[in-house]
View 1: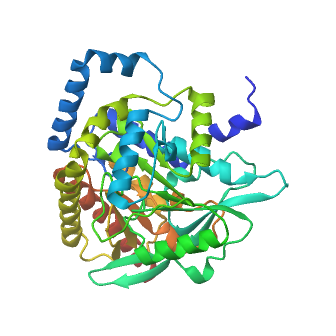
View 2: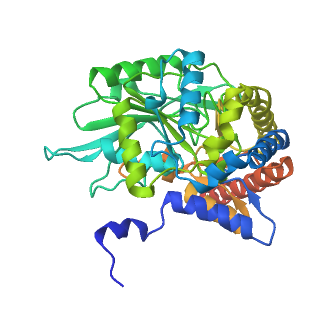
View 3: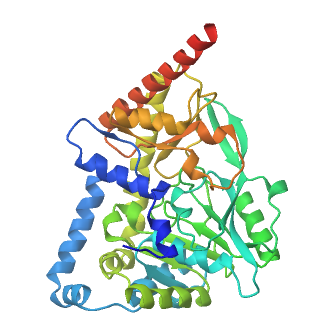
Length: 425
């Protein structure tokens, strides 16, 4: 069987492929497993009960249910959902949106693929542009979507501020930002996956000003942010303007299985999304928008985020931090200040092995985490810090988190002891 050059990008394992394969492996395993690696949200009983109620209402409405499963939606996505969301965002943040500023995709990963390849790669004037990531590490799912032969991502090393309680925080190095004609767009996630970092309002203002000055769009990945699911534990102001492309998702509300991504952007970008949907999938799914529209209309979704989702993850975060304090007190570990999302980013300073090697050792013991290197663009220059961190998802049960973090501590402790023994010889 002969494949085209296009197919070669799907013939090898990547960070994204491994992330999802690990989720499947952990789900199907018969032995003891601690799944701290994937991006699955927590099963919050109170939230799932409300979603089941909304689904029951939907299935009881013969006409609405029939349309949802039996008719294509518009290429831009469900009109009622887009209108409702536009009104909500306008009322809540003063953004003056209409349905023409919103499009639905079959998951945020689909949104990334289209947008990154629309603003980076080869251009009619024979130039080649890249997506600039001003604060790496960044989301592993970005790096595999490029269709161009040349790399389409350019990352900037984060500045590190050391904080009390063995924490640290990444900060944008604006002195080294240097936007130019080789950049097609700038992208940040807020909160950041993998670190839980929330770029400050001041950093966002400076990024927006720099992008507007160079006429370069700013892509903000808000999959964990505002207005939903609201997994931000520090003061942060949502931003949007006609030079900003905001990406939202229903996944972290507890709905990853229905694959619903949302793009909020200028109408010309929305038209691009609509055409892509029509060409590549005819239309996006109706399930997510149909299910959530009544919750948006009643103002119920905001209450779910504020009263159930955010407090749940804050409690889970605090529990994980207390476990680390107990089981890793003797280890040289720093934790990125967990300001949002559902991850802890652990930095083992001077780790004798790479995080990839640590990942393999932990997986052999049934503990799934993610190593740090895949969260950096492949072309980024060498930096030892890139190989000293792991991402831990704390959304699992408390028992799983305790067991997994204890095993991580034991394996890391053994690595430092082995290294010390070699030096002593």
